[in-house]
Image (cartoon, rainbow, N blue to C red; front, side, top):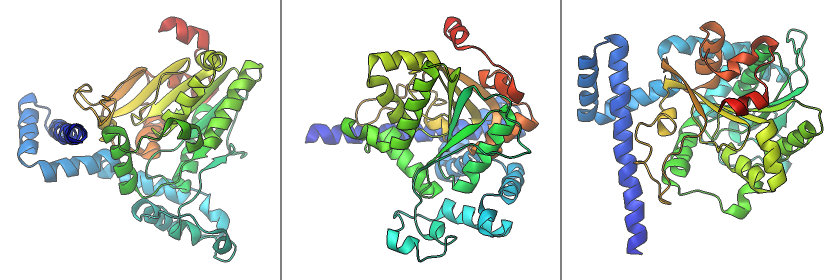
Length: 372
């Protein structure tokens, strides 16, 4: 009993110290943004250590929501989204729904009896949605020139269906490829962050091995079928773009299910992450695209002392794959802080993912393996 308490206390202390390191580091970067002076940046870091709570939380908010200059693009992208308009709702209500779902904790699913009686527009406001697989968007304004590849997007924290489909559409336009969406509903941004911290960094909610496959059966089956079809010659590659660490369990289960299937993963699967989620390297290629001032990414691939931050299982932060970073970019939201900078500013030019833009062929899998 004492040993267990000691392990838990050690994990909590390490987390507190690590969060302090993140606050100091992000504050120093914030000072550097305004005044590019190493001395003043160092002073800013020490100020963060002295005033850890206000400075840490300010940097965390900016590290998730981005600087005010990016907020306008967030609202514009929501107002342009057509998904909610399908129910006859205005763009203003679409923005309201997105903000509501991002802030209000909704732990329960809608009972079947109520689902047929309540207006459809009110259900997402009161109840949590189910995970769902959404097919590619087919529209005359979207050119899909490459069809021999299977792409799938997994949305991240604090993302409702409106935002997820906006990112799905952007990816299709950016890369000229049909892209499926595995939608993971949000339980509000603050709860998603809390759960991610408790699960990833404290290790208190790690699922039992026999439950891993059941965590995301739709994603598991979809990826399994896509890899099998790639092996049969239908697809040249299977590309998984993820903004969520929840795919870790599914990928590991796919890798462990069968040695032959593990070999197929290493031939056909390419994984690209945004925002630094924890993902095992089980495929042909793994790359992390992160903003240097993304506070959620600092919990993972950007943390400067990964061996120090261990959870209750003694597991430290492990970084697999290639890291592609935009050092001065703030924010964690996929659409506003990752995809739009790729379009408007040419961000992440060194990423292999960038080679797929506008329907380009990219790098072949055997070339990826030979270059690593």
